[in-house]
Image 1 (cartoon, rainbow over the protein chains, first blue to last red):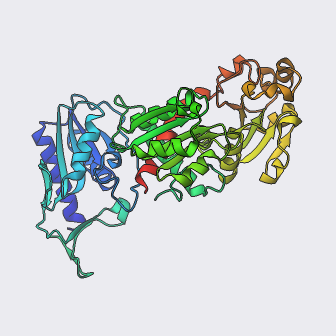
Image 2: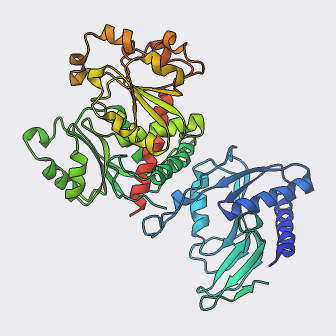
Image 3: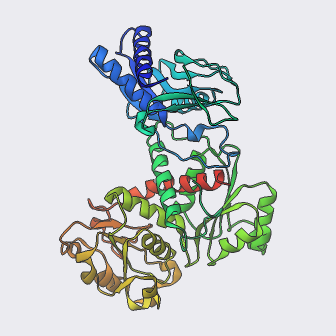
Length: 180
Length: 306
């Protein structure tokens, strides 16, 4: 996926979110740090262009809610949660780059219910690569990519990586295949 | 990123990047304390023993709150009314607590070096909550956090510690931490209460408040520790207040506002006049709030870093 196709995909996700929620009036958008934050910013900008108003935007750090905190070799860095509005009663859309095992989203749900009681929580992801380990499903999917568990998906975003692309990485080669 | 040491015994020799990691992490926990639900789960299943061999209210409560906010199980222990008064040694007390599968020990002790000794005889991570007249690292870290919150930096600021430097573990830890982050540090107090050789730590020594006030950004006013027989070191509390008491009149000589800190508990109108303690430039209650966030950061980093 290159810059143009990613932009089209983000545009479609924004429209689907608006269609499903019948407008932007009760929507709030929460991006999961790090890459979900920038995708969330883009979706909010698309919604603003269509509806004329931008929904509230916040960022969630899920570190404290991870289920592997005590087994990891590398201590994860906390980047801070930044949600400066009340989420209670809102239709809250979580935004992340890749949906894989579902554990990140499980952690995010725990983090969000500690902040309030939204009317609904929905999930938007750029890539769903399968291999779920928890009963979690996305409401809005940019692209379904069939992967082997040994492969990995790299989402690169201009804001952090200097380019927009989605790459499928094979474990036994350095060959970068673009996920079409 | 993780801390270099698996214990927090003191700030002496702690790398500046470790201090910054604790302060940055504390910033994330500070946000947690503003939430409607102030509890997060990362220390679920961990057990922490708070062993206080010396009286403490705010440090003990602050640690306990930090531990509960992180969802740890907390054991309380105070030397009065425990087997310590029956003559049990520190090592035996600690090993018995450890036999109950404790993951971390937070210890306050009247003897300098007690937490260092403990860290050598038990497996659990040890956090020094104040040892004798030696160090009180979490107090200094919360002081650093509060300074950074107010000034957005520590480097280049001039911080003066006022009062009883000799008996003060808060002063020692502050000096190590502030110097490590590049602050200019001075102390001011009666000659009887300034330890000899302090200049070797790169600290300027003053004996008159009026000499130092014009150039300071922060006065960290230490408590006169009456329970440590501090009265032997100066003629009377009244005279101490006249010479070293921080008052509005004295502060009015500074060209810029001076931020006032105090580790508590305050002896009002001894080291600090009431109007200064409650004044607009006092961050004393801010220190108390930040203390919980800083202790959460230390507990979290030590518990998840190993």
